Length: 100
Image (cartoon, rainbow, N blue to C red; front, side, top):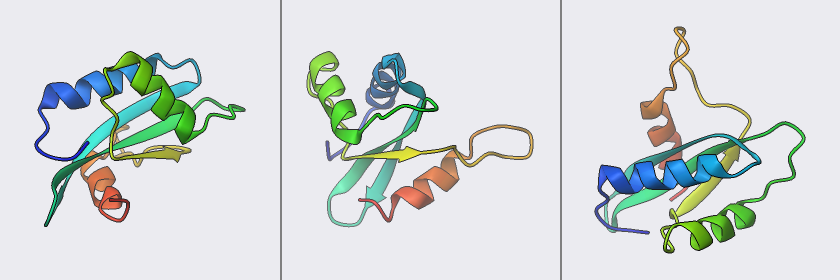
């Protein structure tokens, strides 16, 4: 899903991913690329003991979101957090640059 992305696209994808029963938390970030505009990367913390795969999430999004699928989905054990317990979205964007 390349190109310019509205904030509501990011939030819609996040909302749908967070509805998946094996997702603990999901965040979607927009990553600028030099040649292809912005790309979307979804970061997903799956529930403990879940066998969730990225393909399962792609299929879930295709079914629920009119084919709004991010360019990349990354499964992670946890999000980078600030000392006060907030997600470091800028850190996620930096980490995402290596994925797209």
